[in-house]
Amino acid sequence: MGRWRPPAEKSTALITPQGHARLKAELDELWRVRRPEVVKALAAAAAEGDRSENAEYTYRKKQLGEIDRRVRYLSKRLEALRVVDAAPADREAVFFGAHVTVENIASGETSRYRIVGPDETDARLGWISIDAPLARTMLKKRVDDEFEAQLPGGVVRFVIVEVGYQNDVDAVIPAKAGIQLLSKQ
Image (cartoon, rainbow, N blue to C red; front, side, top):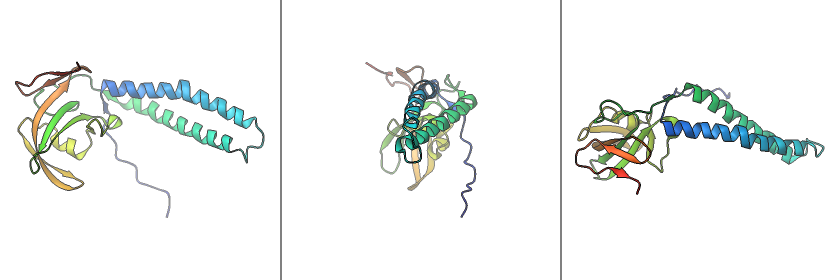
């Protein structure tokens, strides 16, 4: 069996301003801090003599390769990404960047998600990729719209409870009338 694998599906090239800033900070950290540290440690390991039996030298070469690979990826990815820094004109519907509260119709359980780019997903925060099946089926839906999503456990029916967009880091503007603004206190 060969090592060939089909190319991965192209991911959506959208990102929030915060996600873009995080990727740029990671690139800067790798290039200006981590890489020089590893190069210095590699040079020290190489100066110890026989490289064929030098575990530190082998480890540092591998570490440098991983950093260089990530730097190349981030450099290319940052050029390809489009930063979406404004809420859509129709703030009542679900689009990129939306904070969405959904209710599982069968169980009555509610969940809150934010639709973000594939480079900034975080399950702990409820940030799901716009390429995820759940997010794809939510797009263009409005409050009280029902939809079905094909999830790993099977088809699940949901209803949209709330849609909001983040103006800045501190506030969420809900689309449903009568809901208080959420902000950091």
